[in-house]
Image 1: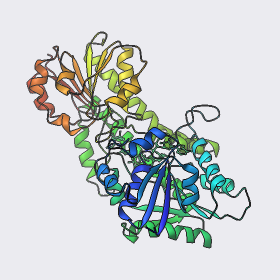
Image 2: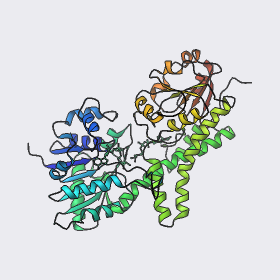
Image 3: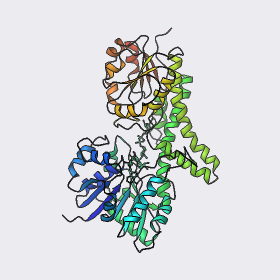
Image 4: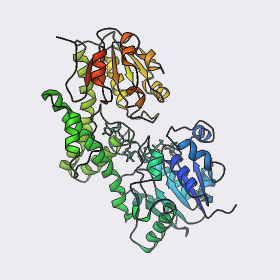
Length: 459
Ligand code: NAD
Ligand code: UGA
């Protein structure tokens, strides 16, 4: 079959795999290939057990795989044979050298750019799908145009706004698709090619085009705004705990203001995930580099409050449990950084588990999807950790439950039955405010939500 367009995604991770699957599903006339240096991951994408758990993803992969969606390890071949190349590689925080712990580690995209340059034999549109520091497109262009052999490369910025757990829906019905291009005839021509691809399923009015630097910055700014809301409500939750105000009520009242809106106002144990922290720190690094110290401090406070919220949660546990956790079994309900994903990157549960172990508690982890990742995250830590899939068995013999992830599963459990099999006095620390606190209290638990008064049986 002759395909109308040939598209390549470099990087078969949380973004590359689902992006490719969505394009292939919505555009059967295009051939979409995903390549990765990680052979094992590619084998998983070609198997029944995909490397990423996302509601609805299995279905779209099954529909398109082998028809117009292909997962492969041949990166040079992929570059040669495709005209539009989405760069979906990881951009983690740098862990070494200048900017360690703050700047983005750029080695993966730079390697990709060099591979594209080496293997391209015809013009390419190179699309920044990963989240990059502002002005990465300029560096990318400089590398791609360093060989003066007449091959044309156009670089576009097309950041991804999907959230894990809702990735398929977010891609299928996005709030907006953003395409940043150079303000030149060639830039507009490349941009229009990408607009045409998305227009296969996204209404035109939702496809925004902009200057390429605005596009790069808007992605970072969007994550900053979302994370800032979480840190703000979490800071408010700390005030609630000192004043007997209830953070759920405060959030509801504040969120009903049309200018503020109700979403992203759930107080929690803190935000996790691979992107909020890294993207904010990347902006902080840029600001410091550009001499914007006050702006950098303001942005960085969002991350600092998040660290504080996690530590505050652990200290609240310690205080409620008579200032010692040594030898006590504590069950973590959930380990994923949010519900409906197996992803545990930067999950607050990692921090809590580490701190509990430092306090010499025994940790039991339960999670419907993330136990394998939890094992990797906690490997090598001193102390006793066990992993139990069934939450009833996991909590049995424990003195406390700490809710880390807002899985629906935990709302519907029989807490009376759980209470009976726990050591008394038994505690629940609801880091997500998802349980029926009155009911848990009635069956015997001492209940400590986030940002509201605790319900205890102590005089
Ligand atoms: P990921 O780690 O899951 O996947 C990245 C993949 O790229 C890995 O499989 C890695 O092996 C591969 N890779 C690295 N260098 C390569 C190379 N030179 N050639 C081929 N493959 C290579 O990362 P992710 O979560 O998919 O994130 C990718 C980017 O998208 C990041 O910049 C991230 O900030 C951004 N983003 C992520 C999300 C999300 O929800 N995860 C959402 C929006 C944006
Ligand atoms: C986030 C953004 O929502 C996406 O738009 C963006 O594309 C993505 O980062 C990215 O760049 O990687 P994601 O991290 O997958 O998506 O998930 P979110 O739903 O944003 O949740 C992030 C964290 O904040 C989770 O730990 C979640 O539990 C926490 N959160 C969220 C709260 O604690 N309270 C809230 O009210 C909302």
